[in-house]
Image (cartoon, rainbow, N blue to C red; front, side, top):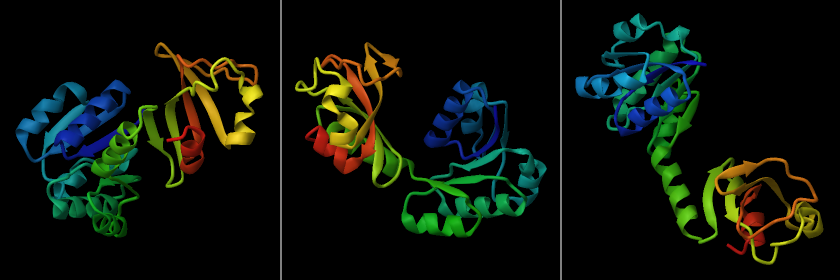
Length: 215
């Protein structure tokens, strides 16, 4: 369990709070708008109405004591930048800031952010890949070149074993798990028989996955 300071409770920040609650982390939530603070009260350990650009207010929170500080402000880049900078000046261990564009990311990184998230861009990428093919059910980008895909078993693979298909050598991809009826099977061996009623969780370079599954 981690202690997390979450600043900015718009739609993105609210979803973060709800997910952290599900993951059973301790969350202190901050926003300048009282209504937003009230909406996340069921999901957080504590919440306050306050301005992240106010140094005295931030200092009173004891930012050094949090494992991660997330700046989820999306509608005011100047406030996001000032908040990020102040957090680092006050000794925050890890600052993760939201960016909409590359130029924002550069300024945030120069002014204290340890990592950047692009929620709109990441969701757009996922949506484009997920719905550009009938065979892809999920997608997790790891780097620019590598990703994890949940993808249907090709009919030509059905009834054959992983070893028989020699997937890792011939296709240059790794099958991490097999999913059937919502259940994951992580016990994958060369003798595992594939079925076209299943989906595969596949790790590999994007171009190798695209080639293997004719995407």
